[in-house]
Image 1: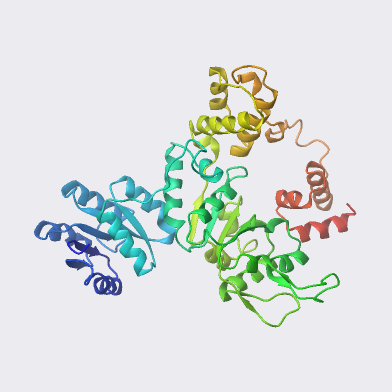
Image 2: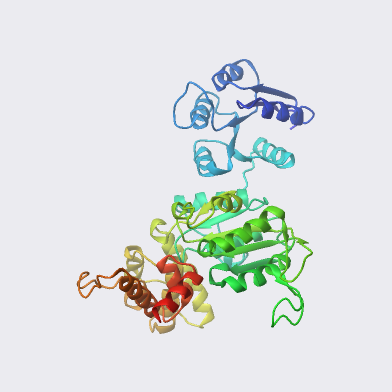
Length: 452
């Protein structure tokens, strides 16, 4: 970096001043410019090795995003100049597009100065951080292997993980059931600076109102009838490491308020105690609830969304991943051949065709269980299409007559909907409440009301 000349282009004068002060003793020369329309003129008259370029300006260029426009202009005229994009946390997906247009890297603001220097050093050395794609389980853990894939959506996901994993940013992982959100959380921890510290997972969607605080925040002896000794909560167990809150979209507004308080103050108050306990955790959260539904204040606090969602990771469904289904199928096949001591050589052509044609509503989880079942039951040297039986629980039952036998009274409609949900999930309160869009406590109240 000592020999490098860097041009910083951003319409924030305070940022320009701060970066110039930071870089001046580190590099040969620093140029700053607030007007992006001047950057090509600067490149024409100065020897610049790297441009640190903001994604958005208040300029005369109206492209929807000025950063991409100026990136393309730089690469067209000065392809040897490396470009690092500056982006806000909510525009990481846009920054990934910039990488495809030729950017060397991107950095999310606000940043730590050491992080910026490391990113610039990597760009000048033509080193791009990325998770290695792995097609076998020989050298890496199971979690990383489940991220294999050559599809564009998976390449974007892998790159985003490689960028955010080493940070302490709070991550919200979103996606359908079975896409592997818990796997993503494990990979983020494994590649973080906290990898040697605890990784604690909590399915908060299944916690009742009474268990929520004691499970997460802990309690002191005598705090309630069965509190016979002090017990640390999950926050304390995860201290110094990573806390993963699964199904966070299903917690009640009361629970959200409690959680927000802890995240803001970075301390927990165990039940029965008046002495708060400081905690240092990196928070990962996951939900299958769409972000638009979470943004409904009647369902989820927006201030909590901002707190847990420094960076959002959207996990694509399997049906959008093309031939990744074959790569994953081969991985699961090799795994279960070893586990069950079978001598299957691979997939027959008709089995591959069947995998490609099926839409996998249960996503990777359904694929995994289908392959396991096929390996167990197969009696051939190769896995055939007939061996692949997909789960009937993922199929939508036919609707005979949607208006038949429908009650007209609103209370009766509600009672019947609750009864059907309870029957469908064999009395599982959490799953029934999730389908009905209720909290567990609200569902309990309605069940008591209707005598269910």
